[in-house]
Length: 98
Image: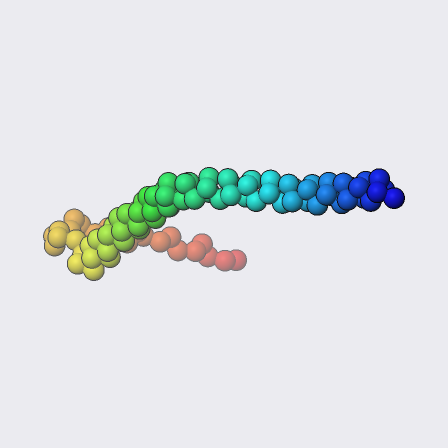
């Protein structure tokens, strides 16, 4: 009777050992992935700030150009003596109808 009991205990120990080993391997792999992601965050954050800075600079330049264009249009041209204005062209009258 002792031999079947040892066999059952051995099988239960193997099943529990496999479950614990699998959980340990999963936790170790998760920890490694976490450390990898944690080490890549500062570089990604720096890259994101560089992209935001580039967009902000472009928006500021476009804003300044628009402001300048509006200011120029509001002031008008400096040339007060414009050249001769075109004269209206002569329109031909309709031919008489029969």
